Length: 251
Ligand SMILES: Nc1ncnc2c1ncn2[C@@H]1O[C@H](COP(=O)(O)OP(=O)(O)OP(=O)(O)O)[C@@H](O)[C@H]1O
View (cartoon, rainbow, N blue to C red):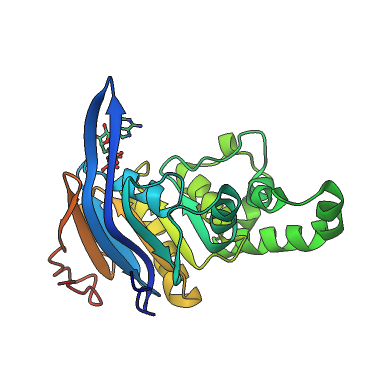
């Protein structure tokens, strides 16, 4: 198959995936083709159970498709060896989740630092500790949370915890951020501030973002929206929201 076009950073081609339970096959993705464009804030929208998280897991190489291909930045990534998949997740992309996945015993700044410790020897870590700490603090500052750097997750609000998770995902200077229901656990106002932060990172820092959501109103805020239904990409959202003038129809 041909490599993706240059403006496409992440692409799924002909993806099929089934789960098996009690010897019954449950087809969850039934031939999904989707291409996310470099520099966009894209949304993948669909009802609960439509297969969004399953697709995201495949895009993140947390699982492998039964059929089809996943391409990132010009390379095929769906059946890479484990080390290469780890490197992709640790360096090329950032991932944030609805429930933040912070370590409860660590402070905000330690949570941001944590992934940078993976793959480094203890000696290597201590040698670079100062610069890593400075970067972690800069990332916390980027998300407006430097003054909470010594707080543990139990001492932060949901919105603050999501900001820490975003700061953590930025540590490795990813080319793309995968966000699974990033506002799903937040009230409307706090969710709005997280959306604005994602938009800022997209516009100011050029970060490509793929956001998964079940909420049409949130999806309409993206540059491109892709709708999933019963394991298929069915259409692209008609986006006429006045708040999203850059919103494009994807035919
Ligand atoms: N590990 C698994 N084993 C069996 N079935 C699964 C597994 N994971 C997901 N499913 C099923 O696959 C379907 C799609 O799930 P998925 O989590 O991808 O949907 P979703 O669109 O992300 O939903 P939600 O918005 O509720 O997270 C669901 O019917 C779910 O029950």
